[in-house]
Structures are given as C-alpha cells and as structure tokens.
Image (tube, rainbow, N blue to C red; front, side, top):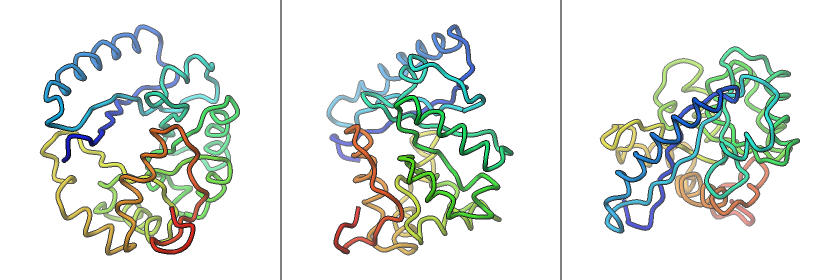
Length: 218
C-alpha cells in the first residue's frame, strides 16, 4: 500500500452512548493512532472516525459532529439488524435533516434490502451514500447475493474492507479480481474515487453509478 494512501478506522459506537463511553473510546483511539502512524511516510496514513449505530432517531448536532468522519460532515451509520424499512429510512433521514451526510454501512445485511435492493435508490436521492462490506461478497445466502447484486447494478458508492487486522484475508488480491468480475472498472471507483469524495467532504453522485468509461461515470 503506497505511503500516500489513507485508511480510516471506524470503531463502533451507539448514538445513545454516554459522554463517558465516548471519552473512553476517544482515549483508546488516540493511543491507536499514535501507534499506527509511527510508520510515517513509509505506510498509509491512518485516520479515525466512527461507525454509528442509529439506535434512536434523536441525536444533537454536536453529538453527530463529534462522531462524523474526520474533517467532514459525513457520518458512517448502521442500523439495528431487524429494523423495518420505514423506520430505517426515518432514522437515516433524521441524520440528513440535521445537515449531515449519512454514509450507510452494509445495507446488504438488512432484510429490507434483501427483498428490494432498489430501495437504496431512494436513499441516494436523499443524499445518502451507500457503502458495502468486502467481507459480504463471500458471505452465504442473501447477504452475499445482495452485496454482489449491488455492485453489478451500480447501486453502491463505497466498498469498505471490514478488515479487523493488517493480515486479514479480505485484503488479498482476490478482492479486486472479484469486484472487477462483477462490474469491470468499478474497483478503483469504489475504493479510491468515491471514498476520495467523502474525505473531500463532497457530495456523492446519485445512484446508479454508470460503468467505467461511460460519459459521466463516477
């Protein structure tokens, strides 16, 4: 991985977690970043955000700001696994109404997405980013089927690794070949171009993304 690459670590936290919980996590994150960035220019730069469980539709502006991805108004969010579609949409829109940009993690894990993957189009129209997990591509059952379908049809902005260690096998070279097999030309879009827009605090293009090489492709 080149030295100018950026990795964002996103530990989990609930929106309802108290200030003491967040402060304790902040200290652990600071220690982690100090250790991870000791490599200097020889390794990727490591930043820290959060993956925020929307266990409520309420959350103050200051709370969301403290949990957003570094230097941006993007907030990486996830949902309770069994939440129905109307409530899922309401909780995500509650983040957008406060002036933040929700980036939805792993929609392929939710039943409402299994049954109607095109629902992510409604979220995209609200300015929501869609991020799937690379680990889902090899998952059995509806999770794997949905993840692959979202890539094939251009219904995803960002592909995250979901790696939990530097030697995690999900980071092997097989990942790029699998993504390119599903949608040629999409690997760079999903792992460099779209994440770059997030880090630049820019809007993501509406879904579906056009195949690489087409005019206006993301």
